[in-house]
Image (tube, rainbow, N blue to C red):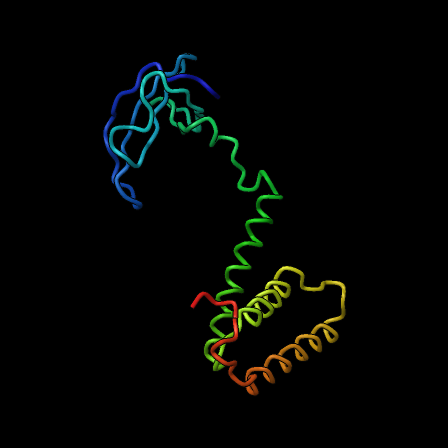
Amino acid sequence: MISKVKHVQPNGTWDSPHGMLYKYEYTMESGETLVAMHKKEGGNFQIGAEVDYEITKRNEHGNFGKVRKPESANYSGSNNKVDDSSRQLMIVRQSSLKCATDILIHNCEKVNVNDVEVLAERLTGWVMDSPKDEPKANHAEQIKDKALELNEKLTNPEPPASEEEDDGLPF
């Protein structure tokens, strides 16, 4: 429930298995009073702050619950699937780029930016767009063919280019 903090006062500490927790008693403008635990001393909310609170336990000792910022109350972990998939693609691309660079640096005399991009895109494509409808044997053959092609390129690299040739690298 959303309300403003009318009164807040420290109410002791508790040494939990996860570290020291600080107890605070909150009185809301809605009239409810509850005790909530926080990881930092000094409390998370001051008088007048708008909060979302939830009473999770009621007994003879009072109301106990959670007090948090209103915008974090509705967080479900994946409210925007477009942003999540876009973020996931960026993570996979970064990882693929790093792997492609490492593979090529350790296996070729001269690394070409185009080779890094091609290998990174191939790795990204395999992770993100792995064919799900194809029979596994066919998919395994495709992977084997790509691995053989890459192995051939790595074991028989192109001769080093002359120093005047622009390889696209800034150095």
